[in-house]
Length: 116
Length: 110
Image (cartoon, rainbow over all chains, first blue to last red; front, side, top):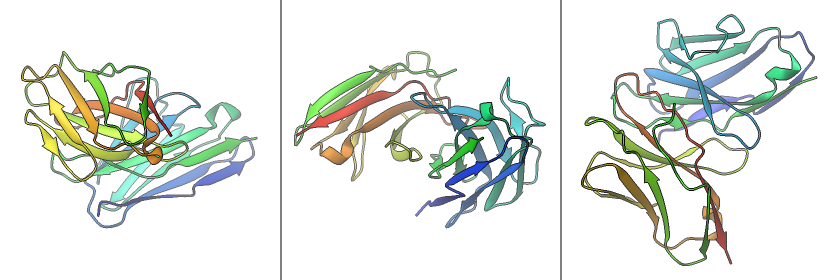
């Protein structure tokens, strides 16, 4: 149980384009979803917290206009990287959690984004 | 910011127990300790979590000190597939944001 699916797993696109990444909880309802990014040889960095039906809360230093997050249902959240540039190339990972406050987050397998 | 500190790296012989320590001296009364591991180019995998009592599941055991300022993750019989980066995280309050530290890179040696 507690499976989180992330799509696509790998995407390469040209500078200036927008890229959408999907995160789905397959066998549970996720009241809260989280988005992280990870650079090579570094730890995960929390970007934003997304509650179903509400606007996402972004961590300090994360541009909300560049990283658009939508959490329209209890099983789906999307991250759109707008006008992507090479410095946005990274490993993006989502996680999902039920509404029970102390339950663990369950992570997707990540999306490797490469901007040329 | 992460509320935990862990050794950067550890080695463990295959078949032996791997004991991974974590310090979380500023943990608050209602916060849980969570352990995850990440194998290269994959998302973190949940291992175990606990509040103050020791916990055990099919993957590992979690020992939390009485003052809750530190904990140890125990993999009882390490295999080569346990080679990964192990993260100890403190969380569980409203919002339940996870702030990852640098983790411990565990290498299981044949």
